[in-house]
Image (cartoon, rainbow, N blue to C red; front, side, top):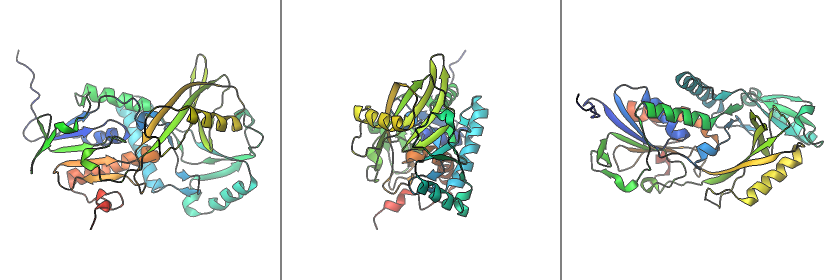
Length: 362
């Protein structure tokens, strides 16, 4: 019996996606549907990537200014459709209807919320103000709360693991680090470790790429805690920090809370300072006893203008980037993965708002 051949048929395009975080996985899902593309995804395994650390909340509202997130409606529709497809493909549930409740401590906050409710753009996202639910174990300073409509939670770690197993099963995933020095190119062709590719797309998150080092990243470190309590609280809420019920175990109920924002410290080590800050914020609001069972840190890839980086390298043919999705990565990734895919494969023009050409000097 002869050996199985892994040579690429002549008519198949070869595509390499570097990174299997939120961005890379969303982009891979676009290519994996095509029978005329030989797809490889290169990723050794995420440990401290922001995709793995991400709590998974999606929220169409910017609480600080009480405005809707950029392109909230179209991004939410795309995100829901994407994860419903992923659930069918992988046979597991990732998307949960767990709306976020905004907590209020002052009447002026309530008045501002109700004023904003009347704006057409926000009326679809801002629910009515409600009395505080006694079972939430909130402090006496919380005088009311209101639901953020169309918000919820995605189990990111579970999805990434399930999709990784799918990629392995399809012989798509290559479990190795990306070595920039092993990428070679000429005027017409790209090679990685001697293997020829038509497209290589870098989806490396906060990892600095030597090929796109001029792009203005403004990455930020975030830390979250996982706490365990004998007290059950079934609602997700936000007041300076978020509080998210995630699971019930034999020893209690698990919650995630966070997150910090640190623009100076760029390592992925959890810090005592962040833990103290998060615990102080939690204890001001939540009156239940708990134990911290985990602390995680990751670096969010963020651009200087808070818009994603999409597009081709200015001089290396076939090399592209998909990055800088920031704190709204779950909402942004499905829509803009498809947008980049259509640009690379169907020559659809990129939106100037996300095209990396916006930073080219005249």
